[in-house]
Length: 293
Ligand SMILES: [Zn+2]
Image (cartoon, rainbow, N blue to C red; front, side, top):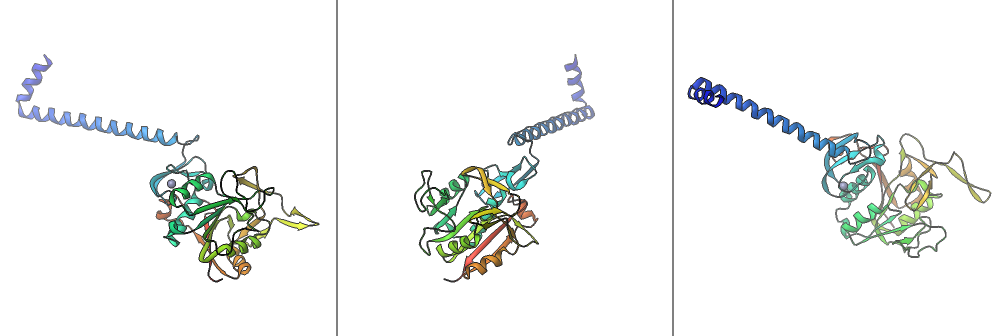
């Protein structure tokens, strides 16, 4: 019966138009429902990436792995938790790689050494270039000897490398853990070739002067301030913070080495930086270029 009424109705032009309009509305409704479902599925995927629901998500391009990606964070401390979903890099790693690629576009041809890298960083560099070497420091192993997990044993204050061995020397959150950083900056400058650079990250307290947190007294190192430890890839006890760096770090390095020109690079709140996942506290890269022998 319904079909009969419909068939008759469709022979009358005004009713035919009404029927067509109703069909159009029905299709539009279905389309909106599908879109809502797609959005819900997508949101669920995103919140499952971390254990915590994602509190930040930005689409963009990762300067570390060179991919179009999404950056997600499951914690408000973005410096350690704002991950690229392609390579798991964190903001300071992306910032350092951006500066390396900008300042040394031929980086794939250069001799690069890194002290105390994390596994992800080693993998990424090994994917990009054959000229990447790395080291860690164990006090109880002879300096310069090969380590079982790759790399060599090196104390940044007493490197075993010859003068002018590398074009790029990288340290990521290492220079705040060195007892005599002045010695380390001198040593790094020594093993760099002229025109090369020490490119590094370390927390910098802007608008303050650098200060040591330990001092050498009666034959041993003692704390001046209550001890603070950061994560260490080779020691679960962590690493003692020995220096709080202020924004005079560039001057201190150049005064120590007499052969470098050092600058602190900031990553301001711009759309371009947001889309590269460059958003976090203590997000500075220091580049100390060897300008003379
Ligand atoms: Zn990435």
